[in-house]
Image (cartoon, rainbow, N blue to C red; front, side, top):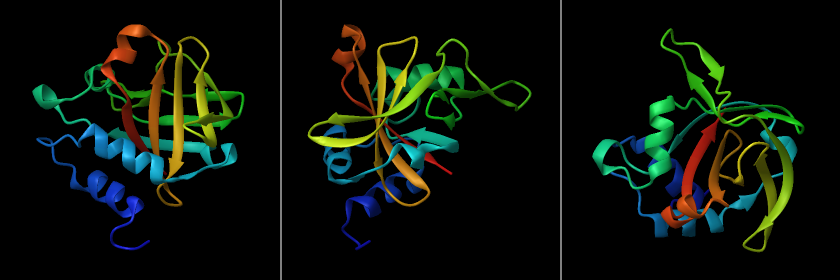
Length: 161
């Protein structure tokens, strides 16, 4: 990974953890599109997560505030037929499945001419598209079929083992 690679830049954004700075969505799209696809089998396992959209009043996407309210804690993929795309933290500090968001399946799906792993929600018209950052870190982009969320634009996030 060279110092100017998209993988390196994504890792810098993740590691910066700057609560006052959401990354520019145009840059995120460009980075995502430059990353390599992943196979569905690479999603198996337990993932922590975060996003690139700022915090509090500086948040740049409505889904960020929603997931912040739910205290999003990543996702759990037990099999291609049984994924828990929204794991959350309880008041007691336990990591649990958020039943409101339901479960999902993992498939390969072509998005912007790239075939890669995708998490397709069972209950909602939501797709998580994935690209490789490193062996332990994946960048995701959430595609919405709902008109209101579609108008908000792409939502970019990361998951890490």
